[in-house]
Image (cartoon, rainbow, N blue to C red; front, side):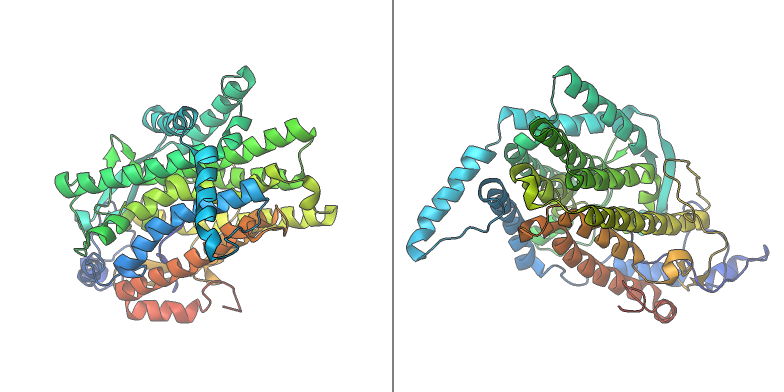
Length: 495
């Protein structure tokens, strides 16, 4: 996925601080005083946090479910790529029981011939990752503290946020390499299969390395929330915050690798189509605009990512590593792959369709970007860590003034103002509708190009359930009150 936020963190009843609140007010949950760096929640809040930092139950179907995903997702990625690359999106399958072995042999031959991890693929994927890591280490950026982390005694970790400069530097470098012929952009999509295989190998290797180092050397902090099942714990992660110098590897993996590569695949498709057709279809431009907006949103708002659930709670395991390093860039791009391989007449829309696609994208991008900014800015205001940033585009309404909220006994505030007055996961709704426009760019020729919105809906629905369950434990009766005030989960007035 895309960038996601944790369960609601911020406000409802407008309770104004009179400036004379003492420590008793804070401990009993009645204070609206701003939280400060490394602040401690109430005693009740600390007890709830301890519960959340224990392994309580299996998620994702337990060990069996995670094994199925770790085996199934790579196989699914190869299968869908084969269908798009060789069969114009048609699902292929054995014609009979006797055809199973020849069919599997044919699939294996496609992978060997079209997705073998070549030297070029290794240089492309590892080179891009190394460049992004180099930029993360050396470029200037904004210093931002994250939320107080319960497992670290409520210490707030510092983050060096320079993804915006890295994004601009990547665009310039890509242009220079293409124009000089050192690395032409169409080469990316022409070598999609081999690069995908390298991404799969690297993601599995990194997850194993992070797992072993976490267990043996407590790399990234003390092992936490372990179930005792080695496969399940590998999937979920061992530690919380592995770092390389000042680079937080979890945040690096969420922003620098997947969305940059996904954008470059879209850009590669645009250039290749122009070279072959002498023009670029709106559908291909739409994918470039959509992926560019998303990557730019991640870069300009990187300083807000430390406030999210992924950063202060999710461990850095196979789930996050694989999906960010391989899953996102090589599955969300299926419409681009189809459009490169198929005739433009099979997917182009009339003018009214293009206008509808564009208006839908920018409208729900605004809601997505604005809602995410509202919650993160609110959290940073409460923490006393708000750092206004004039990074393009600064959207009106992204920083709420005196919003409504619910003060919880935990010590946090649950936001009920702005976009968050309409649905508990309004950002998910806007994010998913954007995803639908991505999938529709390739028309209705194959369900494969709709993989992103279909899969993303399942992910968001599951994530929503996880978040709400954890918030119920964390906030108790205050969460019940919040749900009465903000009635709708995704779609205001409907669901």
